[in-house]
Image 1 (cartoon, rainbow, N blue to C red):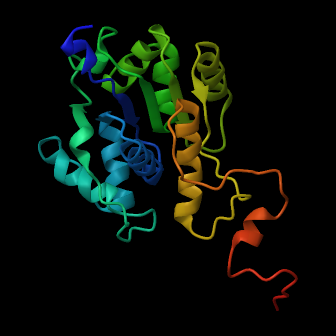
Image 2: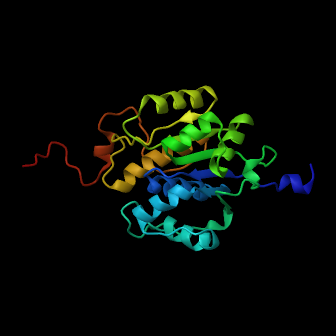
Image 3: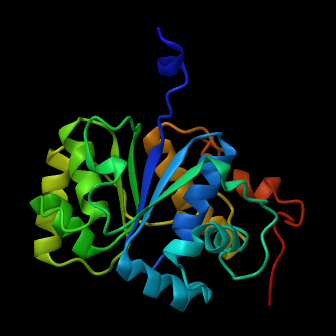
Length: 235
């Protein structure tokens, strides 16, 4: 094998759509970087409005490094996070750049994670519209038979969206609703966000420690909480 082949970069493409749930995207990005994975980031135009609304960050193509670092340094509650983001493994592509690397099947990528996924992005991918780089990269991921995880963040779901999700499932995508569980002993909003992010990384086969896994023991999370006393009554 050539030296170039040995050092070939194979990133996960992360697409952020306009659905509410930018903390999910931040948690997934932190998990990928913490695992030593390379990332190609695509932030849709609609998602910039959501990001501004949910975090106060105005994401700009020309200043994406600064904006991304600020985004990843915040928890889901908007307060500073302990994670110190090293974004050296991130490559950013503008959503309107249909000549970008991820738009081609010959571009070496591991797969793609759409977090959060809006109903519009789901429809675009299911119908093969490729109207922007996020949709085109997802279409490439499916045609190349690479892993595609679609973390839908919408409720309730209409019949058309349900049909689109069935289409994506049939095409080989993992449809993963952003639906947090409570058995892991969540005590903060970030715990619930990390659970969903962890399930996204599970579907991609990326190791992480974002949530407490089920161990076949009822009440295990409560017993592991040092502040919990069995049988304590609350008025």
